[in-house]
Image (cartoon, rainbow, N blue to C red; front, side, top):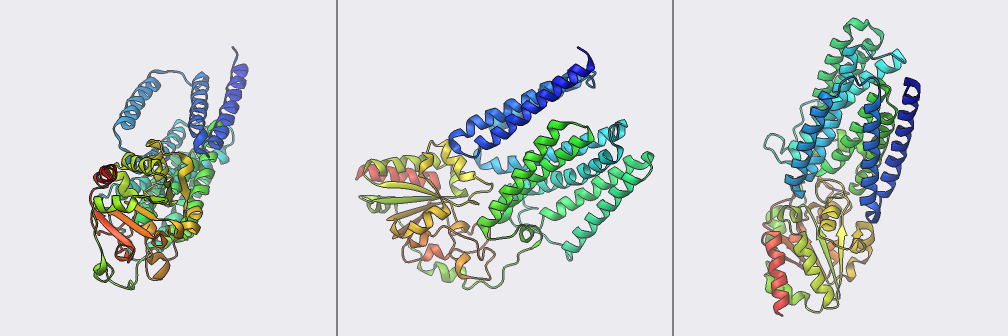
Length: 467
Protein backbone atom coordinates (compact mmCIF):
# COMPACT_ATOMS: atom_id res chain seq x y z
CA UNK A 1 0.00 0.00 0.00
CA UNK A 2 1.50 3.34 -1.04
CA UNK A 3 1.86 6.30 1.31
CA UNK A 4 -0.95 8.34 -0.23
CA UNK A 5 -3.51 5.54 0.00
CA UNK A 6 -2.48 4.76 3.57
CA UNK A 7 -2.81 8.40 4.63
CA UNK A 8 -6.29 8.59 3.08
CA UNK A 9 -7.38 5.47 4.98
CA UNK A 10 -5.97 6.87 8.22
CA UNK A 11 -7.84 10.15 7.76
CA UNK A 12 -11.07 8.25 7.06
CA UNK A 13 -10.54 6.31 10.29
CA UNK A 14 -10.04 9.62 12.08
CA UNK A 15 -13.34 10.90 10.70
CA UNK A 16 -15.10 7.74 11.89
CA UNK A 17 -13.49 8.10 15.32
CA UNK A 18 -14.60 11.74 15.54
CA UNK A 19 -18.18 10.78 14.67
CA UNK A 20 -18.12 8.10 17.38
CA UNK A 21 -16.82 10.66 19.89
CA UNK A 22 -19.67 13.02 19.10
CA UNK A 23 -22.35 10.32 19.30
CA UNK A 24 -20.73 9.00 22.47
CA UNK A 25 -20.96 12.42 24.14
CA UNK A 26 -24.56 12.75 23.06
CA UNK A 27 -25.50 9.36 24.50
CA UNK A 28 -23.65 10.05 27.75
CA UNK A 29 -25.96 13.00 28.39
CA UNK A 30 -28.66 10.59 29.60
CA UNK A 31 -28.21 7.73 32.09
CA UNK A 32 -30.23 5.27 30.00
CA UNK A 33 -27.75 5.51 27.13
CA UNK A 34 -24.62 6.49 29.10
CA UNK A 35 -23.04 3.01 29.06
CA UNK A 36 -23.48 2.72 25.30
CA UNK A 37 -22.10 6.23 24.91
CA UNK A 38 -19.02 5.29 26.90
CA UNK A 39 -18.49 2.21 24.76
CA UNK A 40 -19.02 4.28 21.63
CA UNK A 41 -16.36 6.78 22.68
CA UNK A 42 -13.97 3.98 23.66
CA UNK A 43 -14.43 2.34 20.26
CA UNK A 44 -13.68 5.66 18.58
CA UNK A 45 -10.46 6.01 20.59
CA UNK A 46 -9.44 2.44 19.73
CA UNK A 47 -9.96 3.13 16.02
CA UNK A 48 -7.95 6.37 16.29
CA UNK A 49 -5.05 4.63 18.06
CA UNK A 50 -4.92 1.68 15.62
CA UNK A 51 -5.08 4.06 12.64
CA UNK A 52 -2.24 6.15 14.06
CA UNK A 53 -0.07 3.03 14.38
CA UNK A 54 -0.40 2.53 10.61
CA UNK A 55 1.37 5.79 9.87
CA UNK A 56 4.81 5.56 8.27
CA UNK A 57 6.16 7.92 10.96
CA UNK A 58 5.96 5.00 13.39
CA UNK A 59 9.26 3.22 12.76
CA UNK A 60 9.38 0.95 15.84
CA UNK A 61 6.74 -0.50 18.14
CA UNK A 62 8.88 -1.66 21.08
CA UNK A 63 8.49 1.49 23.21
CA UNK A 64 4.82 1.78 22.24
CA UNK A 65 4.13 -1.76 23.44
CA UNK A 66 5.99 -1.10 26.69
CA UNK A 67 3.88 2.05 27.22
CA UNK A 68 0.66 0.15 26.46
CA UNK A 69 1.62 -2.59 28.92
CA UNK A 70 2.51 -0.16 31.73
CA UNK A 71 -0.58 1.96 31.11
CA UNK A 72 -2.87 -1.08 30.99
CA UNK A 73 -1.54 -2.47 34.26
CA UNK A 74 -1.78 0.91 35.98
CA UNK A 75 -5.29 1.54 34.62
CA UNK A 76 -6.57 -1.91 35.63
CA UNK A 77 -5.07 -1.58 39.12
CA UNK A 78 -6.61 1.87 39.63
CA UNK A 79 -10.01 0.73 38.33
CA UNK A 80 -10.06 -2.15 40.82
CA UNK A 81 -8.48 -0.46 43.82
CA UNK A 82 -9.66 3.18 43.82
CA UNK A 83 -12.88 3.46 45.88
CA UNK A 84 -15.82 5.52 44.66
CA UNK A 85 -15.10 8.10 47.36
CA UNK A 86 -11.72 8.77 45.76
CA UNK A 87 -13.08 9.08 42.22
CA UNK A 88 -12.96 12.92 42.23
CA UNK A 89 -9.26 12.77 43.09
CA UNK A 90 -8.80 10.22 40.32
CA UNK A 91 -10.55 12.46 37.79
CA UNK A 92 -8.32 15.33 38.90
CA UNK A 93 -5.19 13.24 38.35
CA UNK A 94 -6.36 12.07 34.93
CA UNK A 95 -6.93 15.69 33.92
CA UNK A 96 -3.40 16.44 35.07
CA UNK A 97 -1.91 13.51 33.16
CA UNK A 98 -3.62 14.76 30.00
CA UNK A 99 -2.08 18.18 30.43
CA UNK A 100 1.34 16.72 31.25
CA UNK A 101 1.21 14.48 28.17
CA UNK A 102 0.50 17.50 25.97
CA UNK A 103 3.53 19.32 27.41
CA UNK A 104 5.80 16.32 26.78
CA UNK A 105 4.54 15.60 23.25
CA UNK A 106 4.85 19.23 22.15
CA UNK A 107 8.31 19.46 23.75
CA UNK A 108 9.47 16.22 22.12
CA UNK A 109 8.30 17.43 18.71
CA UNK A 110 10.19 20.68 19.27
CA UNK A 111 13.41 18.81 20.14
CA UNK A 112 12.93 16.46 17.18
CA UNK A 113 12.74 19.43 14.85
CA UNK A 114 9.38 18.33 13.48
CA UNK A 115 7.52 21.47 14.53
CA UNK A 116 6.68 23.60 11.54
CA UNK A 117 6.87 20.94 8.81
CA UNK A 118 3.41 22.02 7.63
CA UNK A 119 3.07 25.63 8.81
CA UNK A 120 5.95 26.85 10.99
CA UNK A 121 4.16 29.75 12.69
CA UNK A 122 0.92 27.89 13.44
CA UNK A 123 2.83 24.90 14.80
CA UNK A 124 5.14 27.05 16.94
CA UNK A 125 2.20 29.01 18.39
CA UNK A 126 0.46 25.69 19.12
CA UNK A 127 3.60 24.42 20.85
CA UNK A 128 3.68 27.46 23.13
CA UNK A 129 -0.05 27.10 23.88
CA UNK A 130 0.43 23.40 24.69
CA UNK A 131 3.22 24.29 27.09
CA UNK A 132 1.23 26.99 28.90
CA UNK A 133 -2.15 25.24 29.18
CA UNK A 134 -0.68 21.78 29.69
CA UNK A 135 1.62 22.86 32.53
CA UNK A 136 -1.15 24.86 34.24
CA UNK A 137 -3.42 21.82 33.96
CA UNK A 138 -0.85 19.36 35.31
CA UNK A 139 0.21 21.29 38.39
CA UNK A 140 -3.24 22.74 39.02
CA UNK A 141 -4.65 19.21 38.95
CA UNK A 142 -2.05 18.00 41.45
CA UNK A 143 -3.08 20.79 43.83
CA UNK A 144 -6.76 19.92 43.27
CA UNK A 145 -5.91 16.29 44.06
CA UNK A 146 -4.23 17.37 47.29
CA UNK A 147 -7.28 19.40 48.32
CA UNK A 148 -9.72 16.59 47.53
CA UNK A 149 -7.50 14.10 49.34
CA UNK A 150 -7.44 16.58 52.24
CA UNK A 151 -3.66 16.48 52.47
CA UNK A 152 -2.48 18.71 55.28
CA UNK A 153 -0.49 21.15 53.13
CA UNK A 154 -3.44 21.72 50.77
CA UNK A 155 -6.37 21.47 53.19
CA UNK A 156 -6.74 25.22 53.71
CA UNK A 157 -6.75 27.71 50.82
CA UNK A 158 -3.52 29.72 50.83
CA UNK A 159 -3.34 33.09 49.10
CA UNK A 160 -0.20 35.21 48.89
CA UNK A 161 -0.36 38.99 49.27
CA UNK A 162 -1.14 40.41 45.83
CA UNK A 163 -1.96 36.92 44.55
CA UNK A 164 -4.00 38.09 41.58
CA UNK A 165 -1.32 40.56 40.50
CA UNK A 166 1.32 37.80 40.71
CA UNK A 167 -0.85 35.53 38.57
CA UNK A 168 -1.29 38.25 35.95
CA UNK A 169 2.48 38.90 35.86
CA UNK A 170 3.21 35.18 35.44
CA UNK A 171 0.69 34.90 32.60
CA UNK A 172 2.13 37.94 30.83
CA UNK A 173 5.66 36.54 31.20
CA UNK A 174 4.57 33.20 29.72
CA UNK A 175 2.85 34.93 26.77
CA UNK A 176 5.88 37.18 26.12
CA UNK A 177 8.18 34.17 26.13
CA UNK A 178 5.79 32.40 23.78
CA UNK A 179 6.00 35.36 21.39
CA UNK A 180 9.78 35.32 21.60
CA UNK A 181 9.83 31.58 20.88
CA UNK A 182 7.63 32.00 17.79
CA UNK A 183 9.56 34.99 16.40
CA UNK A 184 13.04 34.10 17.66
CA UNK A 185 15.83 31.82 16.52
CA UNK A 186 14.91 28.11 16.32
CA UNK A 187 18.17 27.28 18.14
CA UNK A 188 16.84 28.93 21.32
CA UNK A 189 13.30 27.52 21.05
CA UNK A 190 13.85 24.53 23.32
CA UNK A 191 15.21 26.60 26.23
CA UNK A 192 12.46 29.17 25.76
CA UNK A 193 9.86 26.39 25.82
CA UNK A 194 11.34 25.06 29.06
CA UNK A 195 11.09 28.53 30.63
CA UNK A 196 7.45 28.79 29.49
CA UNK A 197 6.62 25.42 31.08
CA UNK A 198 8.31 26.36 34.38
CA UNK A 199 6.44 29.68 34.63
CA UNK A 200 3.13 28.06 33.65
CA UNK A 201 3.72 25.35 36.28
CA UNK A 202 4.07 27.99 39.01
CA UNK A 203 0.97 29.71 37.64
CA UNK A 204 -0.99 26.44 37.82
CA UNK A 205 -0.17 26.03 41.50
CA UNK A 206 -0.95 29.68 42.29
CA UNK A 207 -4.28 29.58 40.42
CA UNK A 208 -5.71 26.56 42.24
CA UNK A 209 -4.12 26.84 45.69
CA UNK A 210 -6.26 29.79 46.92
CA UNK A 211 -9.53 28.12 45.85
CA UNK A 212 -11.55 26.58 48.66
CA UNK A 213 -12.61 22.95 48.75
CA UNK A 214 -16.29 23.82 48.26
CA UNK A 215 -15.42 25.09 44.77
CA UNK A 216 -13.54 21.94 43.75
CA UNK A 217 -16.36 20.54 41.54
CA UNK A 218 -16.04 23.67 39.37
CA UNK A 219 -12.25 23.45 39.36
CA UNK A 220 -12.32 19.77 38.34
CA UNK A 221 -14.65 20.57 35.43
CA UNK A 222 -12.49 23.51 34.35
CA UNK A 223 -9.23 21.54 34.53
CA UNK A 224 -10.92 18.89 32.40
CA UNK A 225 -11.57 21.61 29.84
CA UNK A 226 -7.96 22.79 30.05
CA UNK A 227 -6.66 19.27 29.38
CA UNK A 228 -8.82 19.14 26.25
CA UNK A 229 -7.59 22.52 25.02
CA UNK A 230 -3.96 21.45 25.60
CA UNK A 231 -4.59 18.27 23.62
CA UNK A 232 -6.21 20.29 20.83
CA UNK A 233 -3.16 22.57 20.62
CA UNK A 234 -0.87 19.53 20.55
CA UNK A 235 -2.91 18.20 17.63
CA UNK A 236 -1.84 21.27 15.66
CA UNK A 237 1.78 20.67 16.71
CA UNK A 238 1.89 17.14 15.31
CA UNK A 239 -0.70 17.80 12.57
CA UNK A 240 -3.14 15.18 13.91
CA UNK A 241 -6.77 15.92 13.07
CA UNK A 242 -8.38 13.44 15.50
CA UNK A 243 -6.44 14.92 18.42
CA UNK A 244 -7.65 18.39 17.42
CA UNK A 245 -11.27 17.18 17.27
CA UNK A 246 -11.15 15.16 20.50
CA UNK A 247 -9.40 17.99 22.35
CA UNK A 248 -11.97 20.50 21.12
CA UNK A 249 -14.85 18.29 22.29
CA UNK A 250 -13.32 17.83 25.75
CA UNK A 251 -12.50 21.53 26.01
CA UNK A 252 -16.00 22.63 25.01
CA UNK A 253 -17.82 20.11 27.22
CA UNK A 254 -15.62 21.05 30.19
CA UNK A 255 -16.44 24.73 29.80
CA UNK A 256 -20.17 23.96 29.53
CA UNK A 257 -20.02 21.79 32.67
CA UNK A 258 -18.06 24.48 34.53
CA UNK A 259 -20.76 26.99 33.64
CA UNK A 260 -23.49 24.62 34.89
CA UNK A 261 -21.62 24.14 38.17
CA UNK A 262 -21.20 27.91 38.62
CA UNK A 263 -24.90 28.50 38.06
CA UNK A 264 -25.67 25.84 40.66
CA UNK A 265 -23.53 27.77 43.16
CA UNK A 266 -24.74 31.23 42.09
CA UNK A 267 -21.14 32.14 41.36
CA UNK A 268 -19.38 33.43 38.26
CA UNK A 269 -16.41 31.51 36.88
CA UNK A 270 -14.15 34.52 37.40
CA UNK A 271 -15.28 34.70 41.03
CA UNK A 272 -14.39 31.05 41.60
CA UNK A 273 -10.97 31.42 39.95
CA UNK A 274 -9.92 34.85 41.14
CA UNK A 275 -12.21 35.74 44.06
CA UNK A 276 -10.49 34.46 47.18
CA UNK A 277 -13.49 34.22 49.47
CA UNK A 278 -13.03 35.22 53.06
CA UNK A 279 -16.07 34.92 55.29
CA UNK A 280 -17.06 37.91 57.29
CA UNK A 281 -18.72 37.69 60.67
CA UNK A 282 -21.38 34.99 60.52
CA UNK A 283 -24.77 35.97 61.88
CA UNK A 284 -24.52 33.64 64.89
CA UNK A 285 -22.01 31.21 66.36
CA UNK A 286 -21.98 27.43 66.29
CA UNK A 287 -22.88 27.32 69.99
CA UNK A 288 -25.92 29.49 69.32
CA UNK A 289 -27.04 27.44 66.32
CA UNK A 290 -26.61 24.11 68.10
CA UNK A 291 -28.15 25.06 71.46
CA UNK A 292 -31.45 23.45 70.40
CA UNK A 293 -30.08 20.32 68.69
CA UNK A 294 -32.20 17.20 69.36
CA UNK A 295 -30.72 13.73 68.87
CA UNK A 296 -32.75 10.66 67.95
CA UNK A 297 -32.45 6.88 67.59
CA UNK A 298 -33.08 4.30 64.89
CA UNK A 299 -36.23 3.11 66.68
CA UNK A 300 -37.65 6.64 66.82
CA UNK A 301 -36.93 7.16 63.12
CA UNK A 302 -38.59 3.83 62.29
CA UNK A 303 -41.75 4.98 64.06
CA UNK A 304 -41.55 8.27 62.19
CA UNK A 305 -41.38 6.40 58.86
CA UNK A 306 -44.32 4.15 59.70
CA UNK A 307 -47.14 5.07 57.32
CA UNK A 308 -45.42 8.08 55.67
CA UNK A 309 -46.56 9.01 52.20
CA UNK A 310 -43.50 10.84 50.87
CA UNK A 311 -39.82 10.52 51.85
CA UNK A 312 -36.92 12.35 50.22
CA UNK A 313 -33.29 11.31 50.69
CA UNK A 314 -30.69 14.04 50.31
CA UNK A 315 -27.27 12.39 49.75
CA UNK A 316 -23.90 14.06 50.18
CA UNK A 317 -20.21 13.25 50.38
CA UNK A 318 -20.70 11.61 53.79
CA UNK A 319 -22.81 8.93 52.11
CA UNK A 320 -19.92 8.23 49.76
CA UNK A 321 -17.41 8.00 52.63
CA UNK A 322 -19.66 5.60 54.56
CA UNK A 323 -20.49 3.59 51.39
CA UNK A 324 -24.12 3.81 52.50
CA UNK A 325 -25.79 3.99 49.08
CA UNK A 326 -26.84 0.32 49.08
CA UNK A 327 -28.32 0.59 52.58
CA UNK A 328 -30.17 3.76 51.54
CA UNK A 329 -31.61 1.94 48.54
CA UNK A 330 -32.77 -0.93 50.77
CA UNK A 331 -34.50 1.49 53.15
CA UNK A 332 -36.14 3.20 50.21
CA UNK A 333 -37.46 -0.14 48.89
CA UNK A 334 -38.99 -0.98 52.28
CA UNK A 335 -40.75 2.40 52.43
CA UNK A 336 -42.11 1.85 48.90
CA UNK A 337 -43.33 -1.66 49.78
CA UNK A 338 -45.33 -0.07 52.61
CA UNK A 339 -47.05 2.40 50.29
CA UNK A 340 -44.73 5.41 50.52
CA UNK A 341 -43.16 7.40 47.70
CA UNK A 342 -39.36 7.71 47.73
CA UNK A 343 -37.28 10.29 45.89
CA UNK A 344 -33.65 11.40 45.95
CA UNK A 345 -32.89 15.12 45.87
CA UNK A 346 -29.63 15.77 44.02
CA UNK A 347 -27.75 19.05 44.31
CA UNK A 348 -25.51 19.73 41.26
CA UNK A 349 -22.40 20.21 43.42
CA UNK A 350 -23.09 17.56 46.08
CA UNK A 351 -19.97 15.49 46.63
CA UNK A 352 -16.62 16.48 45.20
CA UNK A 353 -17.12 16.22 41.48
CA UNK A 354 -20.00 16.81 39.06
CA UNK A 355 -22.47 13.93 39.16
CA UNK A 356 -20.85 12.27 42.18
CA UNK A 357 -24.15 11.38 43.87
CA UNK A 358 -25.75 10.20 40.61
CA UNK A 359 -22.88 7.76 40.09
CA UNK A 360 -23.10 6.40 43.64
CA UNK A 361 -26.87 5.86 43.46
CA UNK A 362 -26.64 4.32 39.99
CA UNK A 363 -24.06 1.90 41.43
CA UNK A 364 -26.71 0.88 43.99
CA UNK A 365 -29.30 0.33 41.20
CA UNK A 366 -31.52 3.21 42.26
CA UNK A 367 -34.05 3.95 39.53
CA UNK A 368 -32.98 7.07 37.65
CA UNK A 369 -36.56 8.33 37.59
CA UNK A 370 -36.40 8.71 41.39
CA UNK A 371 -33.45 11.12 41.17
CA UNK A 372 -34.77 14.68 41.25
CA UNK A 373 -32.67 17.75 40.54
CA UNK A 374 -32.70 20.62 43.02
CA UNK A 375 -34.97 22.81 40.88
CA UNK A 376 -37.46 19.94 40.54
CA UNK A 377 -37.68 19.02 44.21
CA UNK A 378 -37.60 22.44 45.90
CA UNK A 379 -41.09 23.65 44.84
CA UNK A 380 -42.68 20.57 46.45
CA UNK A 381 -40.47 20.21 49.52
CA UNK A 382 -43.25 21.48 51.81
CA UNK A 383 -45.29 18.35 51.01
CA UNK A 384 -42.48 16.00 52.09
CA UNK A 385 -43.27 14.05 55.27
CA UNK A 386 -39.67 13.14 56.09
CA UNK A 387 -36.45 14.44 54.49
CA UNK A 388 -33.44 12.26 55.35
CA UNK A 389 -30.14 14.07 54.91
CA UNK A 390 -27.25 11.63 54.79
CA UNK A 391 -23.79 13.15 54.64
CA UNK A 392 -24.82 16.44 53.01
CA UNK A 393 -23.99 19.72 54.73
CA UNK A 394 -23.26 22.85 52.71
CA UNK A 395 -25.89 22.06 50.05
CA UNK A 396 -28.65 22.14 52.70
CA UNK A 397 -27.28 24.98 54.82
CA UNK A 398 -29.86 27.79 55.27
CA UNK A 399 -27.04 30.31 55.82
CA UNK A 400 -26.75 30.43 52.03
CA UNK A 401 -30.10 32.25 52.03
CA UNK A 402 -29.97 34.15 55.31
CA UNK A 403 -26.40 35.33 55.87
CA UNK A 404 -24.73 37.58 53.26
CA UNK A 405 -21.40 37.18 55.10
CA UNK A 406 -21.38 33.43 54.66
CA UNK A 407 -18.87 31.90 52.18
CA UNK A 408 -21.83 30.16 50.51
CA UNK A 409 -24.07 33.26 50.45
CA UNK A 410 -26.40 33.16 47.46
CA UNK A 411 -25.73 29.52 46.62
CA UNK A 412 -28.98 27.72 45.80
CA UNK A 413 -29.63 24.93 48.30
CA UNK A 414 -32.06 22.05 48.67
CA UNK A 415 -34.83 23.41 50.92
CA UNK A 416 -35.00 20.48 53.33
CA UNK A 417 -35.85 22.89 56.16
CA UNK A 418 -39.33 23.19 54.59
CA UNK A 419 -40.09 19.47 55.04
CA UNK A 420 -42.39 18.49 57.90
CA UNK A 421 -39.58 16.54 59.59
CA UNK A 422 -35.87 16.47 58.80
CA UNK A 423 -33.59 13.64 59.90
CA UNK A 424 -29.88 14.39 59.56
CA UNK A 425 -27.55 11.38 59.69
CA UNK A 426 -24.08 12.56 60.57
CA UNK A 427 -21.17 11.46 62.77
CA UNK A 428 -20.98 14.80 64.57
CA UNK A 429 -21.80 18.49 64.28
CA UNK A 430 -18.59 19.13 62.35
CA UNK A 431 -18.84 21.65 59.47
CA UNK A 432 -18.85 20.78 55.79
CA UNK A 433 -16.25 21.68 53.16
CA UNK A 434 -17.09 25.38 53.51
CA UNK A 435 -16.04 25.24 57.17
CA UNK A 436 -19.15 26.94 58.62
CA UNK A 437 -21.87 25.80 61.09
CA UNK A 438 -25.27 24.69 59.83
CA UNK A 439 -28.35 26.10 61.64
CA UNK A 440 -30.47 23.34 60.07
CA UNK A 441 -29.11 20.97 62.74
CA UNK A 442 -30.78 23.01 65.50
CA UNK A 443 -34.03 23.74 63.66
CA UNK A 444 -37.33 22.85 65.45
CA UNK A 445 -38.27 20.24 62.81
CA UNK A 446 -34.82 18.58 62.70
CA UNK A 447 -33.67 15.40 64.45
CA UNK A 448 -29.97 14.45 64.50
CA UNK A 449 -28.95 10.79 64.30
CA UNK A 450 -25.26 10.70 65.24
CA UNK A 451 -23.66 7.61 63.68
CA UNK A 452 -21.70 6.28 60.72
CA UNK A 453 -23.91 6.64 57.66
CA UNK A 454 -24.02 2.99 56.66
CA UNK A 455 -24.52 1.67 60.19
CA UNK A 456 -27.19 4.30 60.87
CA UNK A 457 -29.26 3.37 57.82
CA UNK A 458 -28.86 -0.36 58.47
CA UNK A 459 -30.07 0.20 62.04
CA UNK A 460 -33.10 2.09 60.71
CA UNK A 461 -33.81 -0.76 58.25
CA UNK A 462 -33.69 -3.26 61.13
CA UNK A 463 -35.96 -1.11 63.29
CA UNK A 464 -38.49 -0.62 60.47
CA UNK A 465 -38.65 -4.37 59.83
CA UNK A 466 -39.32 -4.99 63.53
CA UNK A 467 -42.40 -2.71 63.57
